[in-house]
Image (tube, rainbow, N blue to C red; front, side):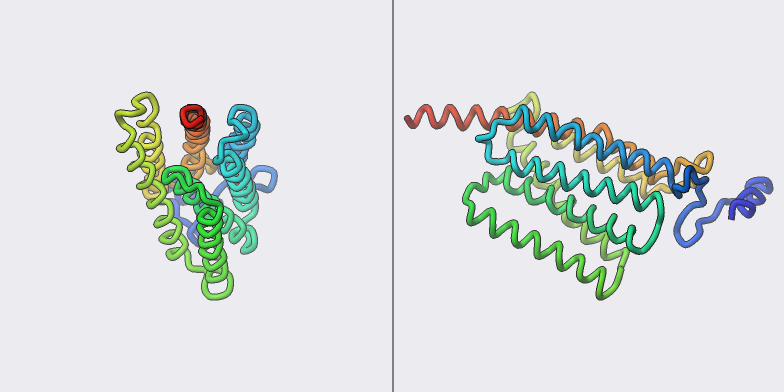
Length: 250
C-alpha cells in the first residue's frame, strides 16, 4: 500500500483511500497514531475536570451527579476512540461508535434537564428511561439489523443538533440576564460546527500521520475545558440563586 502511495507521490498523482481510510504510517503498531494521541488527550481533559467538578460544585446542586456522569461517559467514549484508532476491528469500531452515541445522548439528557429545570425524580427517571431505550434501540439496529454508517451519522446528528439548539435558545434567553457568560454556549456551538467541517473537507494525512479526522479530535481538546468551566460557573450561579430563593421563603 505504501509502495503504491510513494509511486503516486513521485508521479504527482493523488493519494487514494483504501476501504474508506487513508494510508497512515504506524507507530508502535497503532494505525492512526495522531488520532490515538488526541483521543487520549480528550479523555484526560474529562478526567482532569471530574476532580474539579467534585471540588467546586456544591453537593446540594441537583445537576452535579449528571455532570459527573457526563465526564465518565466522555472518558469511556475517548478511551474506545483511542482503541479503535489503534487497531481497526469490527469489535473496536462498534465500541467506538456506541460509546460516542451514548456520550452524545447523555449530553442531550443533562442539557434538557438543566435548561428546562427538570426537578421531579419521576420526570427525570422517565426521561432517562426514554433516552436509554433510544440508545439500546440504536445499538440493536446497528448490531443485529444493519451496521449502517449513514444511519449512524444521521441519528447522532439529529440528537447533537437538538442539543445545540437547546443551548442556543438558552443563550438567547439569558443574553441580558447573564451577559458575562450567556454567550459561551453559543460560542461552543459555533466552534464545534466549524471544527466538524474538518470531517467534510477531508485530505490525505500530512507526513502519513496527520489527517482531517485527527485535527477534528485535536480541536475538541480546548473545547472540553471551555465547556466545563462554563458548567462550573453556571452551577455556582444557579446554586447561589437557589440559596437566596430558600432564604426569602424562610
